[in-house]
Length: 345
Image 1 (cartoon, rainbow, N blue to C red):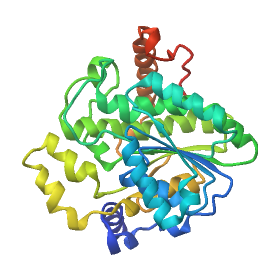
Image 2 (cartoon, rainbow, N blue to C red):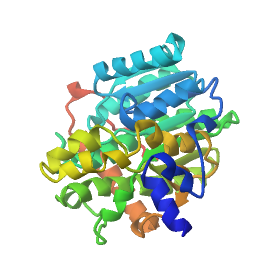
Image 3 (cartoon, rainbow, N blue to C red):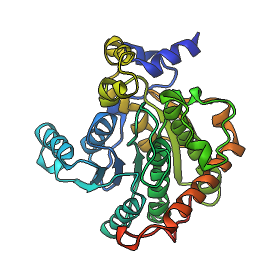
C-alpha cells in the first residue's frame, strides 16, 4: 500500500505529496548563508522554483546559466518584488547553451575565477519530450544537452567543489532525472554514437537522457564520492508531473494532437514549479548520501533495472568521454576554447 502512496506522492501535486514515506518541504531548507550555487535553467519552471528557494534561504551568490537574458531578467524582477532587491542582486546570469560545449567550459572557467567556493550545483536545464534532432556537432540533442553538457560543466567545476569540500563543507550536486527513464528500450547499451543518434521516438529519446542522469549520479558516487571525496555528493531527482513550458507548450512539437492530454487534461493534477523543485532542493541542501535516485518529495527509489547497472553506467561515461573528445578535436580555433584538457568526472 505504501508503494502506491509513494507513486501518487511522487507524481502529483497538492495533498498527494503528503502520502509519501519520506517528507520534505521547501520551508525545511536550511539557512544557506555564505554558500555559493550554480543552476542551469534557473530562470523558469522547476529551475526558478529551486533558484527562488535558495535565495529565500540566504544563498550568498547564485549563478544562473541559461540561453535567454530576457527570461532571467523577468525572474530577477520577480525575486526583487517578493524577496527584496538584495536577494535579486545575488544572482549572476551567464549565457550558456549546453549544446555549445566550448561555451560550457568557458562559463565554468569564468565561475572558478569569480568565486573561491562552490557548494551547490544544480544540473537542471533540459530538452523536453520533443522529436529527435542533432546538434551542430552531430550528436542527439537530448543526450548532448541533458547529459553531456552537464558532464562537461560538472567536470570543469569539480576542482573548485573539491576544494570547498576540503574546508569541511558538504558539496552537493543534483541531476534532473525523470520516471520517464523507465521508457528506455531494454537493449540500450550506450555502445556508440550511432546508437544514441538513433531516433527512438520523443518519449524514449527524452527518457534515455534521463536514464543517463541517474547512471551519471551512480557512476560519480563510485568514482568520486567513494574514491577519496566523501563530502562531494551527487544524486538524481524525479520531480513528478509539473506544470511547465515543457508540459504546456513544448509537448505539441512532438505530439500536435496527443499533446492536449498532457497540456490540458493533466493540468489540474500537475505540480506547480515550487512543488516540482522540492526533491532538487532536498538533494542539494539535505541529502547525506550520494548516488541516489530521489523522487518527490524526498523518497529514495531503486529506479529501473537499467539505472542500477554499473556496466551500463561505465559504458555511458566512456561513450561520453569519447564523443566529447572526438567532436571537440576538430573544433575551429575561433569557436572557443577546445576541450583538449577535458577530464571526465
